[in-house]
Length: 568
Ligand code: PEP
Ligand code: MG
Image (cartoon, rainbow, N blue to C red; front, side, top):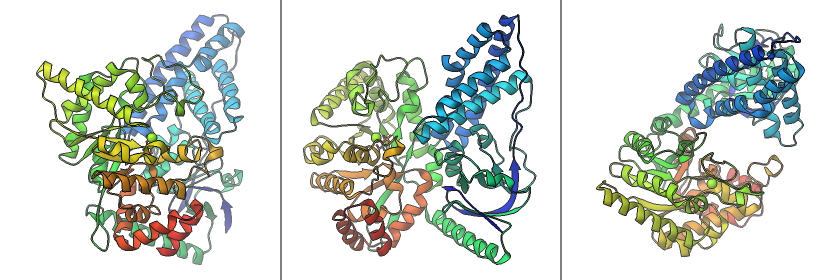
């Protein structure tokens, strides 16, 4: 028996034979050429073919996993039109008179080095994206088949040096019991996809993982990151028992997910989902979601040359409302800014885009574009139980300004003779100022939804996208919990309902605290619904309240976790 220690990247225990996947790296021919125009044309044609292939991959993945996971292929497509990638390859062909393959290979190597030298783990992982799209282009130029995990001989644990997004997007999911990679971190796409698919995964286990022989029996624990090769029979039996236990626990939670979440002493909370595309709506209902607590509408606005029309938006909102029937559907107005620029708006570069013209601020600065969205929302809410939510609100003045535009949008529809609904209007409480002054904002709206992802980064001054500040950006920190508690209390005093739509709502550790703080609505990734509902059912509201009050007085997120564990 051999033990390997990697990074647990996707939870769960799995047992099965190893399938060693080490695709040949294309060895590309290098040559000096005289007809550089011909090489440029070859490159151009290969780029077009790769674009078509990427669009196909994206569509397949989107159907299965939703917009966010599939968006990786948008990034790949952008590389193809990036001056630093194909633009530079074209220059090399002309300047150095080399063939297209050699030019692509050189650019790929340069860019990979640039990414891998970066401090931030997330950016380092993006080097893999360059390699993925670069190799795809090379194979296309050389007429080579693309390696794939599409046809696996039997159920297995895939062992690879690293897995590209293309490898994981097309693999035969029914046969993949687990993933083990020698390289990569938690933010690698293989890891993200494995979590989305619920496949246990261990990454970064070191080159030793590649010495495992084909079909060697493996045990992989995606929580602790431990992998056992050729396990002793009694160890294997022990793990199999644990795997079955976890499986039964998950099956039970899923079976019960379609019943409401009611605490032992009868307090019912609403459990709904966060989505970012039309395709994900059905997954909400399948997972036991009682509606949508956050529809991120950025998917309609990003990666295009012109803004979406009123009709296009209306149709997208209606399509989701049709799936939800009369269940609540909270639609957040556009939440973008300097960090996610829109090609059709001039947005000045900002040093701190997260503190700049983002979310509602941008929409108020672009009232005509904003009103198109508001009219679409008002039209779609004729048939659905739609609620409109404004993101990134800091002041009461912003809410008043947004409501004025909403009134104008209504009047414009009335003047056109168009029918419109009367949706509830709410705000995201994700800036500490809004939480602290919640009593002044509550009379202006019908609900609050706490965006704990941003609330945490702003409260602790810990950039949510930086790996260096990851440990600090913990929504269970008592300072953040106090802001949440205060917002709920002030909201209730004003007679409005309060939800959480940040990641915290889907964390079973946070569930009893949020129950104890009297939260009305929990909105989370569809996959988290069964476990959170199960947790709520285990607690009584009275006990949860006692626990919550205690956690507010602690001084670290770790202590909060320990307190919850001790009380569970
Ligand atoms: C949040 O900030 O908690 C939130 C839900 O919004 P987003 O993650 O889209 O910023
Ligand atoms: Mg936010």
